[in-house]
Amino acid sequence: MPRPFRFVAPFLIPLAACSSVQDDFSRQLLQPPPGWLAEPADVGLAAEPFEIVLHSAASLTGFWIPNERAERRTVVVFHDERSNCSVLHPYYRFLHDAGFQVCVFDPRGFGRSKGTPTLQAWIHDVPELLDWLHARPDVEPERTAYFGTGLGSTAALWAARTQRRCAALVLEGLPSPRAIVRESVTDDGSALSALTAGMVEFAGMPDDIEPEEGAPRLQIPALFLIGEAEPARDRIALGQSFRAYGGPKHLWLLRGTRAAPHALLQHDGEYQRRIGAFLQAAFAGQAAGPLAAGSKTADLPDGRSWYEVQVSGAATDTPVAIEAGVMLVDGTMQFARGWLEHGRARVRLKLPSAPLAVGAADVAAATPDPEQVWRETRTPLAEAAAAIEPLWPRIDELRNGALGRTEMVALADRLGTAPWPAQLEAELADVFAELGRGLVAADDAALRQRGAALLQRAVAAMPAQPLLHWWAGATTTWGFPQEAAVQNAKLLLAAPAQ
Image (cartoon, rainbow, N blue to C red; front, side, top):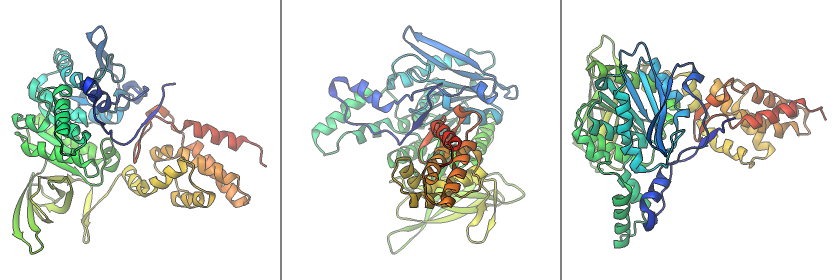
């Protein structure tokens, strides 16, 4: 069986060895995951696998996913530096549902693509993919959009600028390779540190890869997204690129959100809707969502100032809930809520300095609320993700064997007996199994009975298609590494009563 894998926190890049700067930088920046999990056929989508041979030892592989409703509109997905095509089903499913044909691919050395992953290949192999794509009779190059996450968004922006046959861009978590290099080098102010950083930049990075430098030369519509909990380095990089961007641009600051794919959970429903709506509008040559601009209105004695964010959008018969967000120069964010009426809205924020970037997003599922301006109706999955968030530290302690029986009971109390959505139940299957194992060994009959119920819950949580399971929580899970715990739960349930 293919090996499931679980991704952890964003990468850290140590000082590159001067003798092999380029290889070291690429090796630590690009992290191809082990294993292969799912394909479009596993989620009921017809797809054409492809391989583009670059040379005898390198290739690009992926899937072409047609859509008879697409009218030749195509979205190319550029995944991040820690993924491969086998975990992209949450993305290509919603893009296909939105009416697009989709191309997903793995860069050199990722997934089933042959070769050694390097940052140079990450960028400079892309024209080979696009030449293959544009030669297809079912593709119209001018009706193609690029959607990138993480370092994939850097490649997507580079491709849009250099290939010049792109209708729109969606860029989530757009990092600066230069900032990554400089952060990786010890900043002691010495000439050696500056020399080392310069050497890494010169030897390890392709020309013209910096997003902020390429952004002013683009004129196509672009949607920029960044999570409030992503590294400050990446927030600042995206904000600077957004500010420099030359075409129609929209910014969605994702409150309380970590790096992709966390937004798929945190903003379930809204994430898919907004990206789909942006692309639909961009392909149609229409306005692609609310626009925002900020201006200072008054200085305050404490050194801060009032800023007003003006939001404009389509005039509708009924008010539309909007959330305005500003990013400061240090990457921190502030938010304000309002209502778009007759295509206009104004909100005020008290800020310590002028914002680096200003954006706004409409909220479809919102109702008026006297205390919060409006209240969003979240999907059950998004509600569950928010509700479970405070429990992850204690869950991690349990998984590491650091909880005693009293603490296990307390955690079981907080998890409750009512089932969570199936996706979260599956993610917690090993938790239920471990809690059950600890409680069935208790002297107290009531605790043993409760432990048996938890073991049964673990078994019931097993998904019908384990390799399709994913959870973008505190730790992102792809596949079902909980399966061994479920099998152990079955054995405990089958064991004779003591």
